[in-house]
Image 1: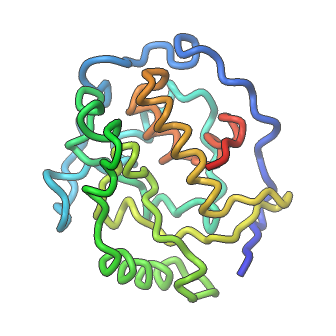
Image 2: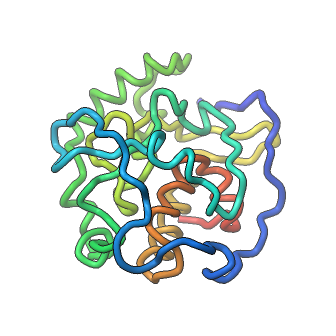
Length: 218
């Protein structure tokens, strides 16, 4: 079932991506993560260490983003109160070469379908979606595994509609976000974008990040 947002789309033609230096002035590409420590969140089964909630850690540190976050809200983007996003403490700027930039890494940390399907059912109800068919949603990691998202933290998973459009008709279903995830993963592993910045881009406003990146396809 296709869903359309009541709010008008707030993004125009994407600007060309500038070089890493002006785009990420002040951000650290090498060495340790430049993200300040956050208050611990509740431990989640399946995680190693304590996931870091994106909302408390990143929302006040968005000044190095190349666009101003303007979340459009459900169903195209998750409700930040229910799905703020969370990161895996094992994945930092210093460990990307042994984690997310290794082929096949995400398969080693992806939670089982039995877990995500149960969570999807619960969250469809919590989000109040009129369409309750499981097949119409992808239980998606807001901060994707390929960018160091927490694999099993419910705060990093949400039932993303497979078919959803903005008021202007722009399709922003689950497959669209997949293209952005691959694009940002490539930039992080190529050293063009700091991991923490890519995580903030996608967690705070993935549609804005997709527009800014030129609407990359998966």
